[in-house]
Length: 83
Ligand code: SF4
Image (cartoon, rainbow, N blue to C red):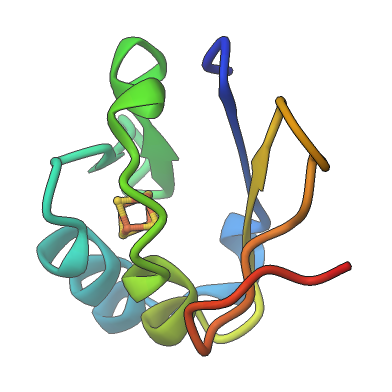
């Protein structure tokens, strides 16, 4: 977990192709596969998130990204932030 960004992944909901798509889509290389080929994050990189929502677009509801500051709003797949 980052200091400013919290990312949650339900890896069981993601197929291998979707996990690879999320890895490719993140412009700041936050996502990787773990030893069991499940999608996870590099915790030390989570605060590099630029809130672009591309992981949500490719993650089919299995990923949530939330700011841990300000309104603490969750990011939505269309690029805005949920209330
Ligand atoms: S919102 Fe963008 S920068 Fe942040 S983790 Fe998702 S793809 Fe990466």
